[in-house]
Structure formats: structure tokens, C-alpha cells
Amino acid sequence: MLCLGGIISTSFAAAKTVEIGVLAFRPKQEMSKKWQPLGKALKRAIPQHDFRIVALDYPELEQAVSERRVDFVLTNPAHFVLLSRRLGLSAPLATLIVEEHGIPLTSFGGVIFALAERTDLKQLSDLKGKRLVAPELGSFGGYQMQAYELALAGVHLPGNAVLQIVGMPHDNAVNAVLDGSADAGFVRTGLLESMTKEHKLDLTKIKILNQQNIAKLPLLLSTRLYPEWAFAAMPHVDENISRRVAATLFQLEEDTATTHAIGIRGFTTPSDYSPVEELQRELRLPPFDSTPKFTLHDVWTRYYWESISAVCASLVILLLAASLLLMNRNLKTKSIKLENEVRLRHGLLDALGEGVYGVDYRGRCIFINPAALLMLGFSENEIIGNDQHALFHHHHPDGSVYPGHDCPVFRSLADDKTRSGEEWFWRKDGSCFQVAITVSPNWVEGGSKGAVVVFHDITERKLNDERIRHMAQHDTLTDLPNRALLTDRLQQALSYAKRDKQRVALMFVDLDHFKPINDTLGHIVGDWLLKQVATRMRECVRDSDTVARVGGDEFVVLLRSIDSTADAVMVAEKIRNALNKPFDLAQQSLHISCSIGMALYPEHAEKENELLDFADIAMYQAKQLGRDKVQVFSSIKS
Image (cartoon, rainbow, N blue to C red):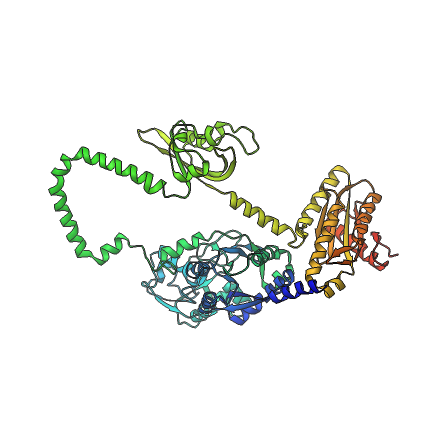
């Protein structure tokens, strides 16, 4: 017992409050209150830690990340890119899913608006020279999206208009337009609707410029759509905490009470944030403002007279050098050819991390880069001049032959179409690996048709996808199926039972006297006991059956097919007897029992919800009869 107490004390000593910094684009008090239910949901899922939600504006959040005073960050896409580039914020764990009018959304945009009475403002180009108002330059949905759309329309900020920054929240920009201190304003999608719902705005008093109508987006919109907010971990956060937080976020959609309280649908796997970086690079916004791209237009504008002089001097030099160039034509042609070959092979292929190879019209390799050779395990001599399909694309992963006419390389050679997809390549040692591949037809030397193939190994990405999918469908403590996976399997079982005229049994299993053990010996012992219970229950059923954990000490057992009620009761008794046996831990024995309620298809119910409810009722009937019993559902209490 002394040894066990030391373990528990050490665990609680190691526990600390986990800080989650949330960007406040609305008033900080309002944002903090909005996201508090998330902290409570994380606490329920990870009781060893407390979770504190802190709403911060742009400077405050950047300072907190810089000083490592927060462990996780929820912020807009542009701010996430800035924090990751400058302050080392890790890759996103998840992307936010919002909900508007019952529709889940994983992307958002910006809104450009003016007073409805402004008949002089009809299109984006009308804003040139006008007074524009935005919350923050760093606001992705409140400035950067709109600046990009205006740039495409020929209005470049801040030079082509008078730009005023009013600070967060976005409400400030709306108020500035309403009181006439600005001609037009920028806010993110959903803000105008929220202010209208809060009776802070009459939508009939404003109009939307460059309004976009996108199916399944019930919001006012003026720009392109970009991925929603990113939830990311700081580099110092323990990997186990990050993994458990990510799993909780992915399961949050099932917790409707929490999502309704926050006003979101949940979280999903991370979106592609590269379009955000592209926008920031085009606008030369932080963090891509330190080394701007210097264009020919910049040179011409800044050095106009010098450029004219240089052009004239170049023409004179070209005229003087013409005779020399003619005399050395053959030498120059050979030099250019050699230079192009060296640049193509060494400057492009050798530096690429992706595998690249080219084929002629017969599908025979004419070049290949080092990255491809490294992945395939062949030497260049073994590849060049040989059929690429016969060398490393000849079989499917199950061992069946891959016909050459189905190969995307030969198909692109036949119809001149570019193809992208996922394939399996075979290494020289006989092992195979999955790749993402793009085949682009082209014309090779001599005018004959060929193709260029680009590929990279996606094995790790596939494994990560599978891990995330498993985490979203299984209980993190016992690795049993969770409620979502149980519901899916129950629906399938009832569908097959209806088709094959079979019977299905569903049991609710609740542990008796578990709470005193958990309260007396602590959560470490409680968690250990739940894992042992899960193991014993799995050993009592068939591989085709399902044991799921749906609550703290509540389990559900699904028997896909049974011959009789007696068979199901026999399995239930087997589980009850297995859990009645002592659990040995640290020279002591723990004793528990269980109450099992059972409902059957089609005797008691034909729908999954009714079957679950009746099994739950039967479990409570078992408890009322004295616990440690198996009770088949009965509509009349005994």
C-alpha cells in the first residue's frame, strides 16, 4: 500500500494546469465565456489535468507563445502561420468545424460592406481612394482576405485607399461604418449575422460588395474561402497530452451539450493551410515581409532612367557582338546544350526530395533522379533504358499481376492526359510501398512523345491517418470501441439481422461498487481496473461481437447473432462470473461485481435507439433486484 500511495502522489504532483490561448476577435470576456465549455470537456476526458481557457488579443497571444505561457493555441489561419514561422508553433492538431443554420463548415471568408444608402459604391474598384476600416492588419478574416480580393480588382492597400485600423473586436469596424467615419469596412464571415442576432445591427442598413453565392454557405461573403481556425500544440507539450487532447477534439462532435454551448460543430483532421501562405506571400504580409519578391515592374519604376540607359547600352553591345556570336555559333550551341543538361539534371532533379523519372513513348526510362533511386533501391544503370512498369510497378500489393495497359504511365502516353493518384511501387529487395504519383505527358528530344513521373512515399501519412481514425473511434483508456463505433456496428448488425432473419442481443453492463474503489484508491487504480475489466469482457465474447465502453464504468456488449435468449443469457453470465473473480494488484485483491441488462431484436425492439434504451432499463432493473444479476428486459417491473 505504501508503494501504491507513492505512485498516486507522484502522478498528482506531476499534474498541472494546461493553458489554452484563444484569439479574441470579439470582446475578450465574451470569447472567454464562449470557450469555457471546451476546457470542461477536456477535463472530463483527461481528469489528471485542469484546462484553463484564456482569451487574448494578437499582441498578448504572440507574447504568451513567445514566453511559453500557453500549451495549446486556437487562432485564425494567418495568425497560425505567423506563429509557426516566427515562434515555432507546431503543426496543427485539428481544424475547427463551425455550424451555421445546421450546416457544418470547415472554411470561412471575409466580408466587405458599406451603408446601403451609398449608391456610389457598387463594385470593388469603387473603393479606390475611399476610407476603409479594418480590425487588425494581422486579422486573416478581417483584413488579409479582403486586401487580396481588392488587389485582384486593382485596388492595392494601403496605397490606393485611406486605411484605418480600429483594433479588436471586429464590432469596432462595423460601428465605424455605421457612424459614418468610414466608407466601407472589413469583417470575417458570420460577424454581421451574430451582431444582428444580438440586436446590435440592422442588416437592412448595409450592403455587401462583391457578394459571393456559394452553395451550402448560409453566410454573407465577399472573398474566397479558406480553412477555418487551427488548434495547435506548443513544442514543449508532452506528446501523450497532445494525442489525448486531439482525440477528445475529434470526439467533441458527439458531445452535443458542449458543442451547442460553444456554438460550433466540433473539430476535424487538419486542413491544408498552404493557400493561406500563398495569400500572405502575394500580399507580402508577415511572416513573408522580410524578403519581398523583387519584380521587373519594381526595377522599372525605381530605376526608370537607369533602365533606359542600360537598354541602350545593351543594344550597342549586342550590335558590336553580333559578328563574334556568328563566328562562335557552333561552340555556343554546344555550350547551351551542355548547360541545359547540367541544369536539368543537377539543378533540378538532384535537389528534389521527391522521386522523378522520365520515360519515352514506349515507357522506357530515359532519366531518373537520386531521390527516386534511393526509394526504389535500384542503381541508375538498372533503370535507364528499361520498362519502368516491369521494374517496379508490376504487381498489386496483394500479389496479383498489374496489367501494363492499366498503368497510369501507359494510359497518359496513350491519351495525353495528366493523371494523379495513389499507387504501389516495388523496391529491388521485393518490398512494396505506397506512393502519391503524378504523370504528365510531354515531348522529349527528337519530337517523340514521352512522360514525366513525380512520386513520393506516403506510407507514414497513411499510418498517421489510420492512427487518427482509430483514436476517433476507440476509447483512449481501454482501446475498446467508443459510442460512435458501437452505433455504427449496431446499425450494421440490425441490417444483417433483418435481411437474414437472425436475432441480436444487446447488453448494458454497469460495474457495482466501482466508485468507492476509484474514490479510495485513486484514478490510477481505477483506470487499471477498467483496463482489466475490458480485457476479461473481450475474452468472454466472439471476435464477431463487440465490447464498447460508453461511460466511466459503463460498457455495452453487442452479440451480432444468437440462436436463443438462453444463449445470450449464458454469455452474460459468463461475463458476470468473470468480473466476480478478484483483481490482484500490489499484494491486495480488489472485488467488484456487475449488473447486466439485456434487450433482444426483434423480441423487444427493431430500432437501435429503442434497443439501447431497453437494455439500459433492464440494467437498472438488475440493480433494483440487488445488483450482481443478469436481467432480460421486461416492461413490467418485478
